[in-house]
Length: 125
Image (tube, rainbow, N blue to C red; front, side):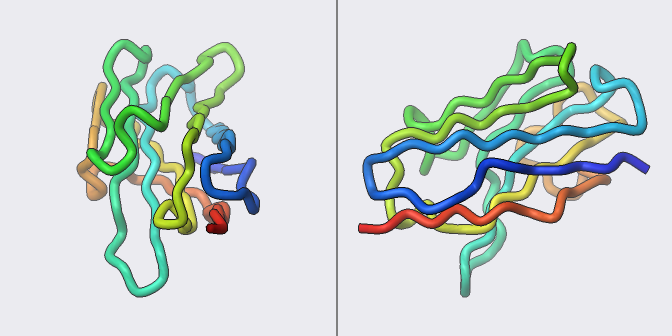
C-alpha cells in the first residue's frame, strides 16, 4: 500500500492562488509517477497535471496550462501543485494519485494505483 495524502485546499477568490501538496509513503518516492485529477459536481473526472519519477517530464490539461505548475521534492516525498489565476470553473475536489509501475503516467487515470482522499478547492467569483 501507498498512502497518499493531499493538503492545501480551501476557498479563494477568482484570480487568486492556492498551493496543493501531496505526500506518498510506503515505498521509495522516486519509484512513483504522480498525478493530479479533479472532480467537480455533475462532471466527469478530469486530468489536471502529472509529473515523472524524477520530475524531468510533466504535463497539463489544456484548461490549466499556463496557470498551474506541478513540481516534486523527492527528498521530502512531496508533490506540489501551484494553482494561479484561479477561475470559478476550477472549483472541484482535487485528488493526488501515484503510479508505482511507470516512469511517467500523464493523464491515464487507470495507470494510477493509489489515490488520496481529495481536497476541496472552491473559487468564488
